[in-house]
Image (tube, rainbow, N blue to C red; front, side, top):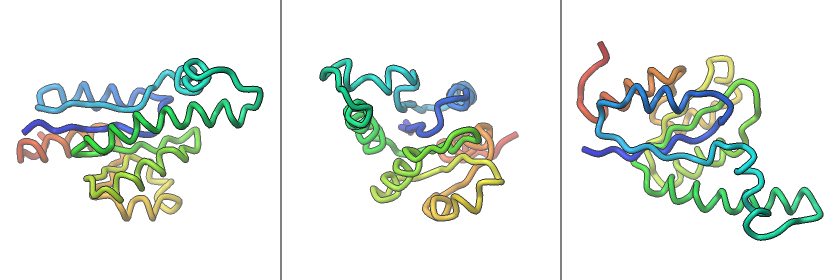
Length: 149
């Protein structure tokens, strides 16, 4: 069974690489947002032209990024959404809600201290993991039926 996994959320750490590396033995395909922060922020004006206002600069980029995000989530079997420690990821909350609304299997990756703030997001998830390793173990179990270890 090939599993299409969309890795969404926080872009300031290497959690995606940990999951992809840990899942190398699985029949899984991974996709996600553009993680080059500058490219993600500036794609709209780089492609569609400069803006005088930062609002419209960000607006153009957000809409182009939304095309990629929506396509990735819609084509995914499993959506993993990471909420990091350092930054507020409002886009991650949107991605989690969008995935849940589409009936996608949602796995949330977050720190225990954020449990209260994310209680509604956690309620929409089929699993809440605290580490990339746990996500790999979930994907392994889903694709092979085998427990870790």
